[in-house]
Length: 454
Image (tube, rainbow, N blue to C red; front, side, top):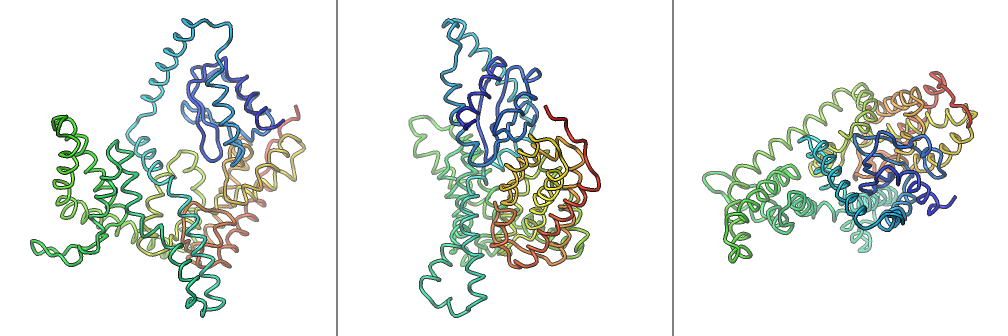
């Protein structure tokens, strides 16, 4: 079955259950259905190319893996847009659309808890930056390897240009975050970017006002988030107050004039305190706790992924990169995916179920690349005990990373690709292999109930 046929089969099964909305992430087709309780989950799992199915609140997630999910989602959306039953008249169609929209709004309200909304906004702010982090992190990591082999190459103009390219995302990071934060707050993205520039402008270092020495860039990402959230709130309020005829030029002017001083004298120093304490807390916890801290952090990360709480860690990674040039948290967390790989390999060797073997064989290559959702939802979580084994593998690998205090120069990478952007490649790979082996042994010893062949 090709991917178009997979999309068609998913659509055929779910069309009777009132498909309200469809979108996708890197690995999953995400659907909202009007009748989620009766959705044929078991039948969906049997479709070729489907690696697993997961229910997250009112959202049905069909795991397809990277690359495949884009093509399936594109084809599915085409079917959804033109897929009204032919025996339905226009009046019935309008009624169904109205009912679907009503259900959609109910779903949104049910999911709109303040904490969930905050995590979603944080994710939306940083997700667009992930490709830039990956590219720049890999360039920096590979250059670091080359410089260790031959230090003289730093004098070559081509290498110096690559060093600039590898560091580029961090020079513009505050601006990018400012733009995306304003966009998420429903305000002008460019005003958000402007406020980010104001608090990072190098000329601030020459200014002292009210016996306060200003410091460009203090607080990093945390300060930008706070400042732009405030300026966006102010902009939205001003749009309601300023007469429409003056709104175009007066509102942006007032936003910059009013927000600048509170940003520099209240929000940025506050953001600096928060950011500095986050950096100190993370580094001291890992440095002082050593292997024990890494064991705990690596072991609990998979449950965090299940709840979506891992999204709140992205600004912490970004701030660690901003302060120290590396994040020592990411290599530890990356071990959770390696534990999945080891546990899934054990299941592959022990299972007699051909469908399960096929699922694992399809998901393992991307698992080695650090994308663990197909293995989580298609293999270890449905089987139960292998998921615990994966957590054990992640904990053991995390202990190794914390013991050697391995740092990464990028975020967005995991698994084998992350090795190139770490500052201690050999120790990172040692932790990775440890997680593979520990996950494998744990799954082999704990065992699982092998599903019957259907």
